[in-house]
Length: 354
Image (cartoon, rainbow, N blue to C red; front, side, top):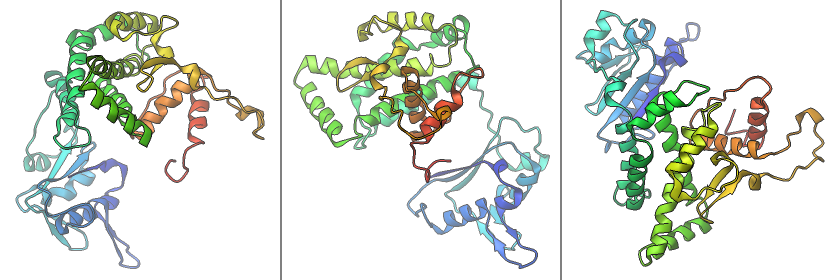
């Protein structure tokens, strides 16, 4: 069980707890309540969990790190201002993930084991392989050997080591990207498409029958494998191709040539289409555009007329919100960024979004 905390998102008092000087009332902080729940196996924590990690993901600052000195030394005890002492159990670990130790004191550094990980040496492959491992778990809902095989083949065919160099040298991006961000976006989009296969009772039943038929018929098996290739290709369009600025047509040509077996429609570019696994074909975004209703009673300035562009932007926003991943909208003033985002969020449950 891993709990992630951004120590810079709250004050030092809110992190470890504080006492009201007037009422002498003690208020628990984020870490004090989290450590206590881990020790006493409250909430989501149980005595069967072998690992209980607290990951501090933020810059090291003496203002908060000094409060954890007793946790990091041999005592392994969280000492609070209220004089309460919370001893860590053998299953508990404190991981501090930082970019550098510029503001760390010698006392802090000497208390922890420092593991330096160079992203250039490791690369993106472990991230991709760990994602693939989700489809290998025996007995889990995500177990799918066909997906493992096809996504491994797609990775070899389409995004080898040279591909990342090509992305940086031949295509102009509107926002600088790192390799890991591309791969992370790729896997998130594929995961979303995979989840849609079981989004409704009808789709779940359809793909269950399709798997059974694939075991009997070679043609159906090829169609089933091609579906995963299309998932991968669509994810490439919006992970690698989404940040491209003026070179979209060049990327369109590359993708059509690389994925020639997927039979993209000849008209337009690959950005104009999304893949429907039930129909097993590429469909133009225009078919997702809803009819405009002028009788809304809203001010004229707030009316949004749906287009293929707004449809695909909302689809990507939906992936981000449902997968709880951040999106960075890049564009000059007047391109409709704010309007599209507001139009999307107005249809969501106000209790679940801000």
